[in-house]
Length: 399
Image (tube, rainbow, N blue to C red; front, side, top):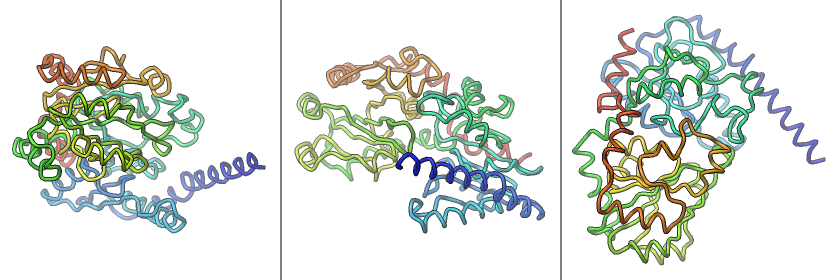
């Protein structure tokens, strides 16, 4: 009986999706497209509930140039019945706004966009939320455990309506072409807007002071930031386990270091240290997942511990040591896969346990191989120079 109900729910979901993709959204778009394009209109759309950094940067720059920006974000309470109704109305509105916009910017997989190709005179620009090319996504993960089913992608194509994609370096163009199933000719190494702030020396130098205001216990100790990616078969089913022996790290490192951890937004909702742990390590471990921006946390950190997260590309701009805690490398590679061999790709030591982390931290304390980080940065971030936002705005306003 349960399996029958599951099949019925799945079938109803597919019918709803087909109706939206092939009937409702196209009909709304065609009707709205009878009106002329507004040459001053910019549409910023996202699956987030707040405007992401890339879109915020573009909004400020474009409005300073006389453009009129409209934001369309996910309504609050998206999982509830009223939230779903609000999301339905929002997606209908998206089609109407899309049909008369001169420029449309997205930075994630925004599904309502994929139902209609842009009319002549509209540019659809994918900024993407990650720099470089690390773990696979999009069409590159078709039929992998993490990725979408290939038949589903044939039925409901994704990433298929972009007129341009902006990336952090020329070297990553082939990977984005594969992930988006698009021609390399539309992929432009113009940089990533949100990376501009890493070239703002005033901001970078202020971040440690900001962190000390929030956590005065830090004192004069160096800051280690742990920023892992999520685990799970999809972002909606994500989870996190720190896999750190906090007691051992506290005993070995707390005299000279503090540990900040910033989890992926999806996993931050469901993970936290126990009340006992928070009290016991109150002067050593600090959770910055929910109330400290990632750029501020990274600029304040003296070194980064990560795993398979794309934050390593931004962090390379700071020329500071990185440690790679890949305790489940073989499993992650099998289920998600990488564009390059992990062991040859990451710009820092790979460790598998807390002992390895402690040793790597001590080694980084006395110095690290800057040439490795520089080569990594030059290969994957050479279009990010502090002027990405302006360059992207000029590229598409001049067309």
